[in-house]
Amino acid sequence: MAEEDRMKIETTFEIKEKISFLRRTKEYFLQYNFIILDEDTIKNTISFKKGSVFKNAFVTNPLNLQSQIDISLQNMTANIVYNLNTQQVITSPKDIAVWNTLIENYKTYVLHYKNEAEILEEKIKDTKKQTNQIILYIVIISFICSIPISFIAVKTGFIIMPIEIIILFAVFYYVKKNK
Image (tube, rainbow, N blue to C red; front, side):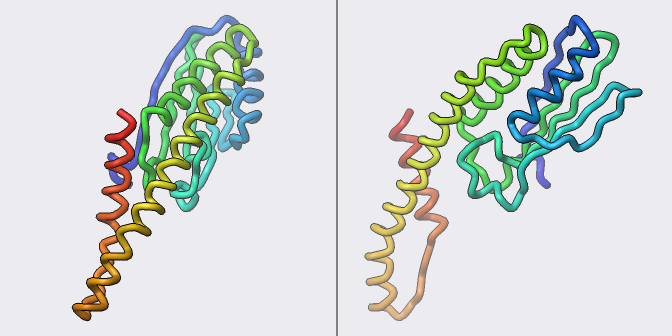
């Protein structure tokens, strides 16, 4: 996987109590359907995973992208590394905002046992809406562009379908329109 196909977010914070940290960490990520990949109580590490590279192109919720979260505890410092596979995905600022909210909510949950899930759900809802609008623009522009392209193909005998150009134009138009 190329470097541009990954997004990595790292964060650290101080914890107050080790046992509640580990329990709350599991509770938090399991509630968002992450799967425990590895857990080592001696080394104080735990890893979660979610998603599939094959589903990345069809995901509207950024939390469902293929991802792995590695958490280690050294003394009373929690080190968290979020590795996201962004292959086949156009990552928007709203996607990044969802992950940042997940991270901040995780810290709040671990430290204060307070889950601000409604804030995260609102950001996910906004991101899904934006993704669905991009898909709609791509479909509409593809349909509109396919008419003259088909006409030219019939008249000239060349079968030319520059679908990548149509998709790029649609995404460019949408991004430009929503700045």
